[in-house]
Image (tube, rainbow, N blue to C red; front, side):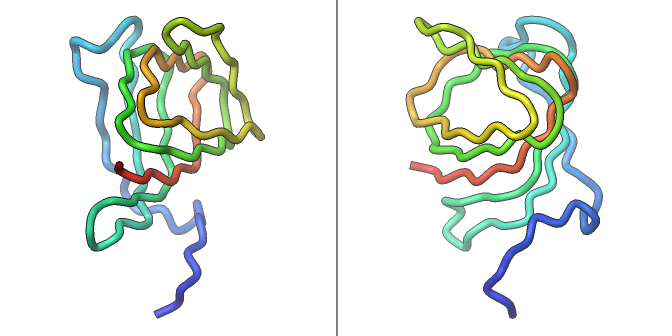
Length: 117
């Protein structure tokens, strides 16, 4: 077994298809595709590729997440803060306690690493 994990989009199998809970949707009908490449045995860390179609929904992060946008445009509206537009090439961390709205303007794809706290 190799200890190197590559985020290789050509190795993507069938994604998990989800959508935000109806009570969280602010606008549109966003659909999510997730290709999870790694889950630690204790279930506390996940890594993979996520994609969403346009729409907006409320988020409430209890986990720590590193994101790298590879395609599209999204706007993060953190409660009480100015909105932040994110596009291909942008990298960021969402810390536990982040509350607000994730708005996908153009279908967005990101690499993610999530650590449950």
